[in-house]
Image 1 (tube, rainbow over the protein chains, first blue to last red):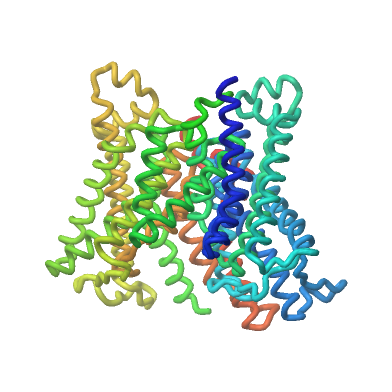
Image 2: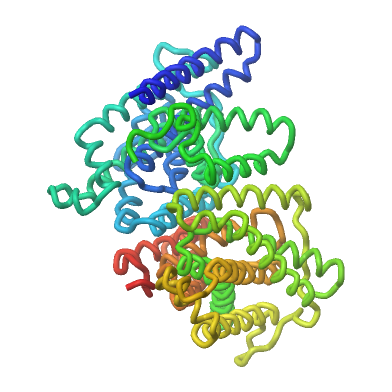
Length: 329
Length: 306
């Protein structure tokens, strides 16, 4: 159990560190540091979503950008209509846009979840390499649709002129917005922890390890996987909505397969299936980007090299490196 | 809509399909024989296009450029196989996806470093420039016709290679039982390098051929790669025949969809709306096709392994 407590200690340090950084940045009058910390929190949330499918369920989804981007577009489109005073639809009843995060988030999760239900219904009938390619292909379909559909900016993307609002909080204040993202991140991680240790989580892990045995005890692996895939997509969709508000902008690149790859990188760099893995991974990614991105335009080259080395030689990621081998295989 | 335009679009679809086949053949071969999913296949396509553009612009000879594209892509493929890919055969698909995704980053940024962000230009060779008159009075670019021909020849050549030659026998044997053919004294590691380089060469050829009608730029391989995935999912992963059928199907459906759907919506909408709805739907058409195929045949049209 030594490793377990060491992992918990590392998780605590990670969570505390992420919370402190924006305040240090503010005291040093470096507001950019707050933005970076917020990006870590938002991207980590996207990774937590994927980690549920990938780590716990063994579902290698290469299409999570679809949910990330859809969440972002929900935030963007609702704000666009609200700020332009244009109803989204008039008949059969009038629906207006909104700038309330508390309405935007559930809708973003709903839309991502529905998309995941549809994509999962097709892609989960297959497995292995088919699943990877099909999730990628469906995400690409939504990406091309977003590019070719002119109503919401098409290729140019959709700006959100004023950050959406949260009751009682000034979301334009960087620290306040960071805290919103941070609290959501911790709440979702807690939720995923509960989920993983529930009967559902046990069934999901069993589905990853042995399909036949799970069927033999009377649980349909397909349904378990589909539910996990949908929940995973909803979390990533929520992250997408936050990202849109952080950047005050959403464009098709949030739906692109590079985004899917990056979300996967957060999970891998941190450690697959680790509760705080995506937080560590996203932090590493942003750290890497801000260090090497400042030095050279071609920093992705070095990212590729590091990723290659991690995959070939350092499986288990940062959390695995610090806390030792995973508890379960 | 005239029938001449219709046939021209059909030929465009065929040309697109043939080009997709060159990509998909390598992907499906590598998956069938080595069980590897290779995202970096699009990078090899880009390597081929850049090699062709560089050599053709330097020497003024398009055929030298094509030769260079095949050689450069095959060499890049062999190097990558020896340095990275062969460590991945025993790994799970997640590791393969990540490592080959890392290779894409390395190839793309490396190419941007060497050649810059501006696209290179590659002209259609003079011999093949200009239109040709087809029976029925249809004018069609000779170069595109040549691509269709090359693709057809490659398909036949690949069939002969796999069905009739010793190398083909070994490839098929490697597909069904790698331990057994290793026990029979075949150097399986070398065989894998050869198969990977062969797939890379085909991708490089496709990149060079397409480079002359589109621009040669970093990232050009990625959209094609994803379409090639759709092709082999439809055709059945591991099946060359499936790759051919799937590629033609995707090429024709995509091209005809972009051509016909806007016209179809014009029947009951005004022109502007019909164009935007039609073209947005057309971009989704092949993915819908893929979903439909998967409902009927979850393992693709020509499942390779039973």
